Amino acid sequence: MSINNWFKVNDESKILTPGLIVFPERIEHNIKSMISISGDVNRLIPHVKTYKMPSVVKLQMDYGIKEFKCATFGELEMLISCKVKHILLAIQPTKEKAIRFLNLQKKYPKIKFSTLVDNIDSLKLFSSLSKAIDIRMNLWLDINNGMNRTGIIPDKALGLCLELFEDQNLKFNGLHVYDGHIRHTSLSKRLNQCNLDFEKVEQLVVQIKNKIGTLPQIITGGTPSFYPHSLRKKNLLSPGTTLLWDLGYQKIWKESPFLHAAVLVTRLISKPAPNIYCFDLGHKAVSSEMPLPRMEIFGLEGASHKSQSEEHLVIEYKDHKNLNIGDLFYAIPYHICPTVAKYNKSYVVINGEIQSSWDIQARDYQLSF
Image 1 (cartoon, helix red, strand yellow):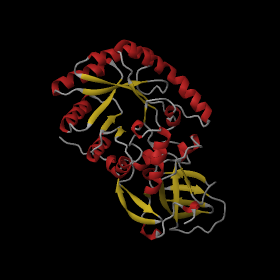
Image 2: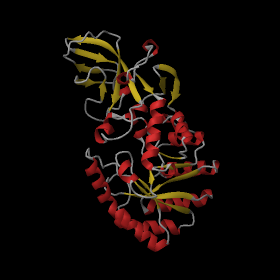
Image 3: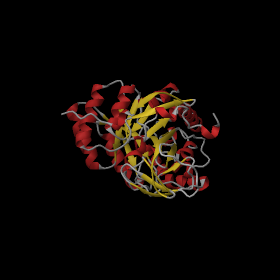
């Protein structure tokens, strides 16, 4: 198969659309690239939100990655089923979630559980719950170094850090610093902003060491700042989109070694007017939080994406190719993470052949009452 047609399936009649295809060999390439950039597999604590598949977790575990981040209880339970070493719930839990989190921690003592805190009220709540359930909660101090989504700013973090460190019901694990706001397409600008925004974190680290006598462990970055933070020493690294890759991050990190390891499949279902084509690739099949176009369709590059609704994507394409109803097309989404969450299963393709399907297990969460 031509390298330019790496995504094509030999027997396209087996594919129902819209659908998602993943390519294990490309995922393995991306895992190796993550390890190479980190310089040490033990520095990696990748986020599972991108793919939500236990099969991808197990591929990473085969390469020595043992610790993972997640954001939902569906993802947390998936990681429990994979028997990983450490699960970081990278979102500060509410009371209801904290109780469930601590009960899971007690139920699975061989796995380390940790989560985030960024304010004194949550810290007191977690302390009270930990005491009642009789288990210490592992907490990372969530630091806001410029994204302004969650976290406490470094200038105000020392007091909260000392409260956490001194609380007998809790265990201070270190600092969690996510800087998803750093999205320059220029590598030099990305490096400069990452280092500039991290200066106050470094000052905080010195203050903490002076107060408690040891340097805190630090979890840094996501995907765009993965490389800048890899140049530091001893800090942990938590990329996520690097496993499957997408157009959005490809445009930000053009020099990256990562390969697209997932594609969408869609079929032409209508030609309602001259040069107007409709595909079965609506909001329910691809992430739609951003303006059109939301994907690039191979073979229809340069097409004008006119509209999208729940089940349909309408494009205008003036290059007069012979497009027929039922033709299959492949597409790369701009944002792969919420796109994967729209599917229950993915096709697994190796060397053009559909080998099996992988469950996208963590898109669901089984409620218990």
